[in-house]
Length: 389
Image (cartoon, rainbow, N blue to C red; front, side, top):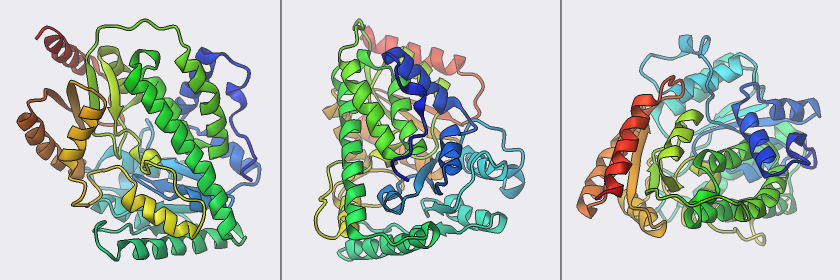
C-alpha cells in the first residue's frame, strides 16, 4: 500500500503553486488524502499527540494519521466531555463521530488525564480498537529502553492483526529508512528557517511539516525533495525583523491564521510545532533490532516536551539551547487554553528567560479563535520595541 499516492494536486506546479496546494490540503477539514487512501483499500491508524512510532504502522502497510484536531465545531463531541478541556480533544473526537475521518485503529497516550481518557471515550463509541500506548514515565530509568521496545512489540502485534499480515524485521527496517529520510528533509527545512528565514514564511514551513501526517511518508518525501531546492533559490528580500523562537505548540496547534499572523510580525527561526513529527533528531540504525532502534531513538536521540519526564533534558535548559542555536533574540511563549502541561511549563520558562535576560511574549490560543487582531497588535508592539532598543 505504501506505493499509493493520495495527493496529486502538487504535481506539475511551480513553488508558489505547490505551496498553495499544500496550504489548501491543510485547510480541508474533510481530509481528502485519508479518504483516498481508504478508497484504495488502505487501513488507517489515527494517533493522538504528541509522539507515535509511525514506522510500526507504516511497516504493516497502514497509514499513520496524526490527529491534531481541526477548526470544526464540536457539535457532537461536546456531549462526551466536560466544559473545561482543551479544544484538540473535542475536535479530534468530532472528526471521528462526524465520519470526516474513519479509522481501523485509534491510539492515544497518557500525556494528561484527558488524553488518556480519550481511548475510553472512543472505545465506547466506535467498533475498532482504541488503545493507549504507554511511553515510559521516567525516560532516564535503566529499564526504560527494554520496557519501551516491549510496548512497541505490543503495538506491532495489534497492527499485524488489523492489517492481516505479518511484519518482518526487514519490513520495519525499510520503514525506518523511509522515516530517516523524512526526518533528514525536515531538518533541512528547519535549517532554511534558521539560516534564511525570509525564504520561507512561518505558515508555509508549518504546512509543509503538517501534511506529513496526512499521507504516506514516501509521498511526503517526494514533495519535500521537490520543494526544498526551490526554497533555497527563492527570490525573496530580507527584512529587518526580530528572530524569535515559538514555544508551546507541542500538542494542540495554534490556528493556522494565527501562525500566519505571527509570521507577519517576526522571523520565527525555530519552534516546537508538531514536535512529534520531528521528535527523533538523528537517523536511526537500520541494522539490528528495529524495535530497539525505535526505543533508543525515543529515549536517547530525541527532542523535549512538557509531556515527557526526563531529568537529563530539563525543559528550561532545552529552550535556552534552542534560542542560542537558532540565534534568536526573543521567545513567544504560548499555550493552548485549558492545557495543564503547557500552562504549568510556562511558569518555569518565564523564570528561566527572566534569569537569562531574554525578552518574551506570553499568549494563549485555542483552535476556534475567530479574531487575532488584538494579539497581532500586541505582538507587533513587542517586536517593534525590541527593534528600537
